[in-house]
Length: 253
Image: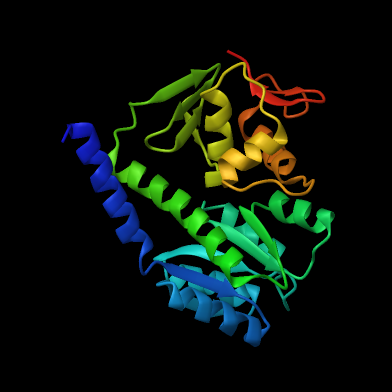
């Protein structure tokens, strides 16, 4: 077996091992929903912590740094889910899946705009919930393994004042690290590693989220906007991540 294949096999083993028994924090003021989600997750091998409001959520995260994902309701007493999401994004790129009864497109846009990685509406199918959790967990766990095992100098892409390191999942602008969520990093890397190729929003969604697009949604556009705010000098006049009107997005070589 070649060294590269052996290394990949070890990485897959570590990835699976890290995903098993991972801790997920479920935040919902509806006890029945929280208990139901807990049953699905525990049956699939995850450890579950629960909080009933935003303040308790933030406190639980401080007390339990082992938490690897957050499933978050929006409408809660006190600090709502959107404010919780904003607060977490100041210091962490932990995956956040919003699970909410608010199902309008604008609700989803606002949710993604605060830093959520995914959005699932109630009522939900348990298999879809588990599929989305696994997708986010795999993305986040891969990042953690990359940071631990790969030197920061390998597999780098340089675009203007940006340096994108795939192995370490690190992006730097003028030498200073830019805090991206896993989804934002994947979008940036997809475009950067295919310079001058135009990707439609549907293509980006299918490649990054690993799901088929069955209806029009603004998920990708919201993430593109947030990404520009972080990597561009002027997000309203982008020099790196370009819009090709009527077609999609690209990064020029």
